[in-house]
Figure 1 (tube, rainbow, N blue to C red):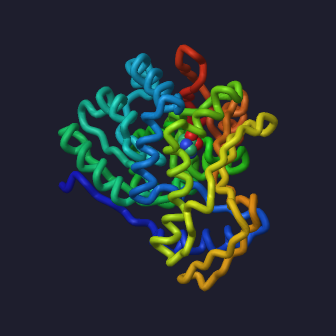
Figure 2 (spheres, rainbow, N blue to C red):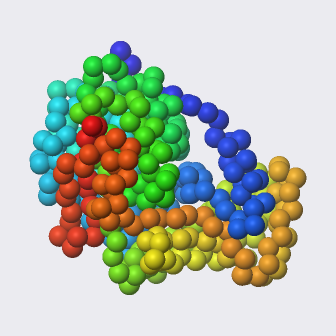
Figure 3 (cartoon, protein in one colour):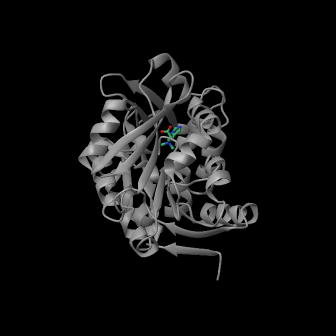
Length: 323
Ligand code: AVJ
């Protein structure tokens, strides 16, 4: 049997074009965050995870390293291990050491095809008992890819690490979890990592790093429009802005126009006007409390049964069981 397979759900190119077309025609211009992750964007995100200010990765790694036995035991015997937004799967490896013994099917789901291919093959080399069934899919509607991959009678654990859940607001989270729930069986489990609420003084530097990597990550969206859609953005005429909205409990990222300007996008036959100070809203990164995670889980048919945090209490790893 082939140990690696890859499913492409849809062609992502037209989706990017459609998102840019509608997003830049809106009153508050927006481009949704899943489009950050072209090859350069994924590489820049990988660099963000090494930044001193970006505590999220290290906090979650601390939990997974210190509690890996406990977590693996709580996950139980797993036949199929799904990962939503698998990315580089850097932290996943910490759990695979425990879970891949005795055969396991790993099911990474991501929007970056090249990364899925690369990581899939790396893992096959590292774990001889593993098979990999990868799928190119947006994690917001995971059932589309999972319906064909999950087998009847197999026990499934789903990983949703790295506070990827933070890109979804409460309504979107419940919709995503409810969709996931439709392809899971009672007692299947979900391990979700969430960045917890904390002072602005810690949160804001994590999204405004001193090297400017997060700025490059954000501005790369404009480069991507230039590369893929024939855009004419002068990237130097825009600036990165990220701030914490304490009442809402979320980081907002924007690209700010530094002057009045009109930008053409050839492939979309568009000319977009920006006035000085106008922004494109590119990301929300929600910071959730324990109670919110529990409430969203319950609404979607899951029960939180375990919770782990790092020593500082900055990041939470939640085990949700299908009711
Ligand atoms: C991948 C969504 C978890 O929100 O912290 C990092 C993305 N954006 N720096 C986050 C991100 C800017 C990241 N997530």
